[in-house]
Length: 173
Image (cartoon, rainbow, N blue to C red; front, side, top):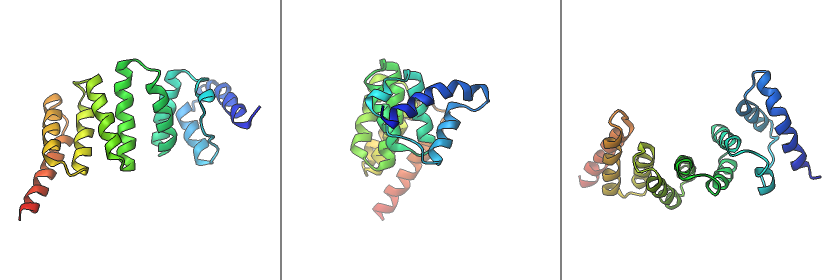
C-alpha cells in the first residue's frame, strides 16, 4: 500500500480524535503543512472524503496559501456538487486563478459563477478586479456598479470604481 494512501487513511481516523482534543481539522491541516507533511491528492484519495470534508480542506489549503492543492480539490468538487455549491466553488477557484495572474481562467470561472448564482456580490466584485487587472476598465466599471447594486453595504466595489476613475484621469493627462 503506497505511503500516500496510508497517510490519508490515518488522517481520516485521526480527524475525529483531533476534534475531541479541541483541534479542528483545519488547524491540524495547517500544522501538518507547515511541517511539510502534505501529500499530493489523487482521485483515489479524494474519493475517500465526503464533499463537505473536501470543501473544508480546500478552504484550509487556501488559508495556508497552498493554492495548487486547493485548486486541485476545488476542480474535483466542481464535478461533484450541485449548482448552488458550484457557485461558491467558482468564487474560490476564481480567486486562486486571479492570485496566479491567470486572468482568462479567472474571468471564465467568474462568469460561470454569475450564471449559477446571478445575485451574488462576490462573483461580480472578483470579475471586476479581474477586468481591472486586464485593463478592461469600462467593462470593470459596469460589473462593479452591478456589484454595488446587489449589495450596497459592501464598500470594496466602490473603492475599486474610484481607483479605476483615478487611473483613467491619469491616463488622459
